[in-house]
Amino acid sequence: MPAVIDPVDVASIEAQLGRAPRGLLRVAWRCANGDPGVVVTAPRLPDGTPFPTLYYLTCPHAVAGASTLEAQGLMADMTARLADDAGLAQHYRRAHESYLAERRAFGVVPEIDHVSAGGMPTRVKCLHVLVAHSLAVGPGVNPLGDEAVALLRDFPFGECLGAT
Image (tube, rainbow, N blue to C red; front, side, top):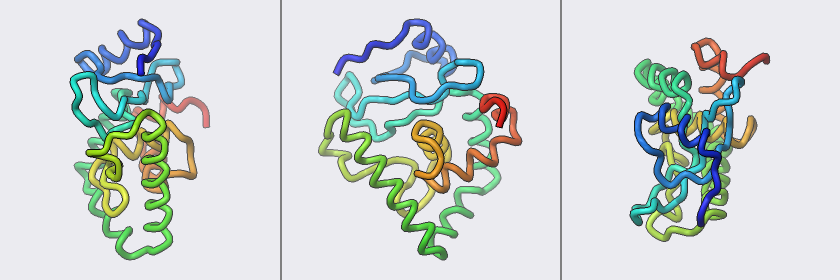
């Protein structure tokens, strides 16, 4: 499915990533200054590789902040909470199911059809994915992504969110 994306956005995303974006479909969320911050990536890359990460975080502040939260051990804490909190685990499973449905709208890729991203639905493997998912779809869908976004408000990323 060919995507039509503003060349200015493509150049911005390339500068953010330090490489050409692959499988780019559209911008899903923008920083307060208008720069792309989350992009939607095709479930199958142009070279045929299955790619489960539908929402890809490109905002450098968010990427750095998510990396810092990961280094601080937040993923292990969140995964432990999933084992102890049935309500949280159920909400996270719904986020996983929503992610799969959103990705299927861009095409079914049998190799990854039941695999979402970021560790969903049973663990937290990548905060970058969860943050991207929450930013792209808005609050209330991915509880752990929402928590990570809230924590990032205290990082330089908070500037990207604009006035709250």
